[in-house]
Amino acid sequence: MTLHTDATYRLGDTDVDALYLGGLLLWSSAPPEPPPTPPSLRSQSSGSTTGTSAVVTLPAGWQADDYLTLIVSTNQAPTLGFSAGVASSTLLASAGARLQAIRVVPNPGATTVTLTSSVSAVLTWWAGAWLDVDPAATVAAANNIGNSTTAPVEVPVVDLGYLSTGFETYVSAAGVNAAATWGTVPTPLFATTTGNGALSVRSDTVAAGLLTRPSASTFDRGAGGSSRNESALALILQPVQTRVVNRLTNGSFETGSAVATGWELEGTAPHPFVASRVATGTVDGAVAQRLQFTGQPGDTGNVAFYQAPIACTPGEAVHLSIYLSGTLTAAYAIVGIEGFVTAGGAYISEADTTILAGGLTGTPTLFEVDYVAPSNCTALAVYLQIPTVAPSSVVDVYLDRAVLL
Image (cartoon, rainbow, N blue to C red; front, top):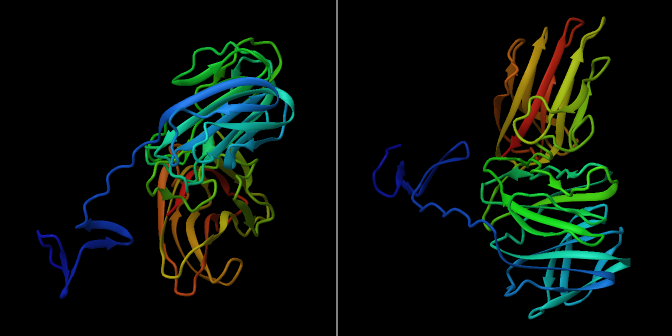
């Protein structure tokens, strides 16, 4: 290979306009794509009424390619719908039905839409017309609901499902089935304090390289000590441009119980890992996955934590990265990728990296694995395994920010 200073590389007798190594673009003659334009708010509108319907005035000057988001707070838990002015609608997030975020696509030229409620309720709403939102992208969202005597309304963590670019817009909202005083909140878009469907909405940005958007500052509804239903939701609006998608579900382990959603335990040892999700060992988001194993007399075999099946294409190059911390005593760990003919089918091969006893510390450390799917491979598994356990084995490992690209 000869390096040239002109607009091509020459490989043998062939000029090419891009050079890759292991799927990584090293050089290209094509001009770089401009950065995406972050979503921005063109205009907004709001209102409140009591009954089984509300006429929602659309944000002024909305256009057909705007992303119209309607957030509704109520003092009941109704089923919401539309009876007029709407071509389609999609529920983005619902906090116990008392607080809902809905994407609305109005009929061309509409200035209002009619929102309906299955029961008579206070309907307090805010509508925003957003520019430069990718209409094809799945909106990552999270919600929460509780009956609390404290003034703060906690905002849930959003698991994006991809690596953020730093150009996303984060929208969060809180609703209360009573009046609220709403203490000062950062970057507010809207807040109404009266009626039995108080609502506050705000937005900000998402830092680049995150798998989750940690919960923002709480909404302070005021009147601490008075029990009332309070709800919160959050969602991420993506810019119009391709983002890097994490192929793992719940790669930052933000959802689930003891074992994070999308992941599983297995092994041949007499007892498995003891799993928990904790605030220690975090790199991204609010929690990490903790796996513990303490050997007992007669222990042999292995214990493992994995996610599968993950679809792939024969010949495809994939890259796993994960942060690990903790301790390994009288045991070693393997982080790897396995290939299978089909989901649940025959094992083909694997690529992995070995972490020896004593190879982890209290500081999260990045480990990486590369794998090329064989020609008969259509499914993958990603795993952390302790291949040989013994009565003297003590394992305490924290996992966070697992990414498969």
